[in-house]
Length: 212
Image (tube, rainbow, N blue to C red; front, side, top):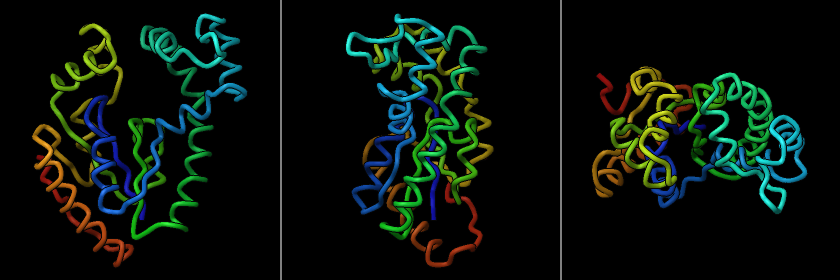
């Protein structure tokens, strides 16, 4: 069974994945795969450099992600072009990673993806877990983590799917607005339920957390 884990920027997806990992659950992170497909020597990086010029490359030939991010978040058309170049390549590699993980690990694995719904990657999973925090927390965390000002942090959050729409598409919700103990307790309960579901493949289950 594959569980899709998603949430807005700075919602704590990696922290949640590590908490599942402490319980013996394997995961693949779509962000890591996204970096793979734009590594030096990859066709996607060549296409990006051809479109935007050397300004998007660092001295070692790798992608300057900050420069590219500023370009695409300033122009929705450019962001759409970038997604058309990268998303199919990311999807193909995720398929391979998940097939390998399903063969080697059990009883379930995680696909951690910030664009689970937007990219169509939700079609790869059996359940969708949304990590939820208030928008104000996302903005503050993004500004601090990425070294951007508040306006740019707001623009990044605004460019993503809205919090309400993510919640509406969720099968399960983890509230990551509390402390580590709260997160660990929720992960433990989700793990118990997912193991139960994996033993009864195909069974329906009600959401673990009320999203109303």
